[in-house]
Each structure stands twice: as structure tokens, then as C-alpha cells.
Amino acid sequence: MRRLNARKIEAWHHALSEQPARVRTRPGAEPNYREADSTKDGNRKRRATANRVLTVLKAALNHAWKSGHVPNDDAWRRVRPFREVEVARVRYLTEAECTRLANASEPAFRNLVVGALLTGCRYSELTAMQAADFNPDAGIITVRTSKAGKPRHVVLTIEGQRLLAMLTAGKLGNELIFTRDDGAAWGKSHQLRPMIAACKQASIRPAVSFHVLRHTHGSTLAMRGVPLGVIAEQLGHADTRMTEKHYAHLAPSYVADTIRASFPELGIVSETTIASLKLRA
Image 1 (cartoon, rainbow, N blue to C red):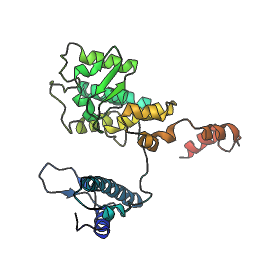
Image 2 (cartoon, helix red, strand yellow; image 1 turned 135 degrees about the vertical axis):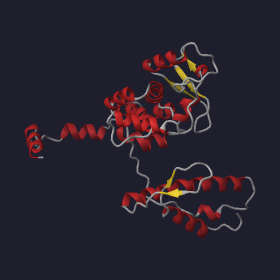
Image 3 (cartoon, rainbow, N blue to C red; image 1 turned 45 degrees about the vertical axis):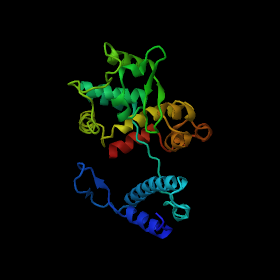
Image 4 (cartoon, one colour; image 1 turned 30 degrees about the horizontal axis):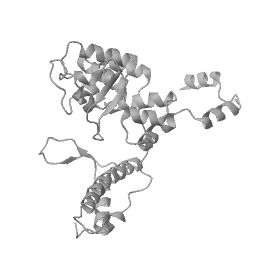
């Protein structure tokens, strides 16, 4: 660490941004990479990834500095991340897509899908939940260990309470709420294949990841005017910065409402015009 300097870290950071995305492999296997995406958006994605890795490195180095293992933090404090590469483009499902996806899922996986949509919880949080974590009196489910390392209480809608009551009926407190068809626990990546299959069956193209269900929960709340602070609390964000990044543009806007109410309809694009364009296409 004493031999680290800003030039070395910057060179590593830039080299990382030029590396193609890795393909998921088994533990211990040789790393494999996807074909390099040389488009503008491909370059942006790689730089955004490099920035996230740099953040992790800086956190580790800062911990070492605060613990007295290195005399100062000059080497990495002067390294700046790439600018204007973080674009918050949140994919979320419409109500119709949610219904189609749930109906297209196998029974056990359907419980997971509906659970994610109604709570906004991550896959790892759902699959670790035990029957005792559900409090029917308060209408909440407790996430014992979240990504932030802290427990949190998730408020359940009436529909969510019905789902949890059904899934916990007759179970002991230490039994898992969400299990596979054979009663076994869901593993780390067991959601990947059934999610792809359900998206195909539900005609959701391109297929979405399981994490999009969490975004759908947050987006739905934002579009119905729920304060961002409340959404942050529900999703377990440490503060509202992440919530604002992903959902602020979906919230009802005074600017948007004022413009739509004030700008006149010019008659340039009427229903007749749209119908005519469709016929030409």
C-alpha cells in the first residue's frame, strides 16, 4: 500500500474500463469474457462498472488508512471516477406485464415473483425469510439482514398480507417461507432459468431480471406520488440519494403537470393522423 500512487491507480482504473464484460462461470473456472461492445453505450457501461469497482477499492483503502496501516490517503483521494457515465434507466413492468409474468410462472416460482412485486425485496432477502419474520398483527415482514447489513421492516399491502398468511400457514417459526416445489431452499442463482422461461411465456421482451421486480415495486410507488423518503425506507436504502437517482423522474412533477395543462393542442397529431400513419406502415 505504501508503494501505491495516483498514477498506478489511474492506470488500473482505465485498463479496467477497457475490459469486456465477464461471463458468469463456475467458482474456480478460468475467467471468460463477452465480445467487446465498442458502441458509445457499451463504453459508457464499462466505465460505469470501472467506477463502481473503484468505489469498492477506495472504501477498502480508506478503512486501512483509518485503521493506521498507511500514513495518508493522498494516493487514491486524487483519483477521480469517469464523469457522466451513470445513467439511471430503470426498467419496470406495467400492471399487465406483472399479471402475465405471475400467471406464466411455475407455482413455487410464482410465489417468489408475487412476493417481490408486493414487497420490493431482493431475491436473497425473500429466499432467507422465515415464517417467524411475518407479523400478521402489524402487517409487516422483517428482513433480518439486508444488503446494507441492517434489519428492516417492510410494510405489506393487503394483498401482500394475504400472500404471506397463505405461505406461512402451518409452518414452524424457523421454516422458510419461500421454497421450491420439492420443499428445498432456493439457491443463489436458481431464479435465472425460471425467470427467463416465465418472461418468454408471458411475451415480455427483452426478458427482464428478477431484480426488475424490485424496481417495479419502487416505480409503482413513485408514480402514485409516494414520497421518496418513504420509498427509500421501504426498499432499505441508506438515504434518499439512490432512491432519487432511480425513481425521482417517475414521481408526479409540478413542471410536467403545468406544461401539459398550459400548452395548447395544435391539432398536428390527431387520432386520424395516427390511424393514417399506421395504415401506411
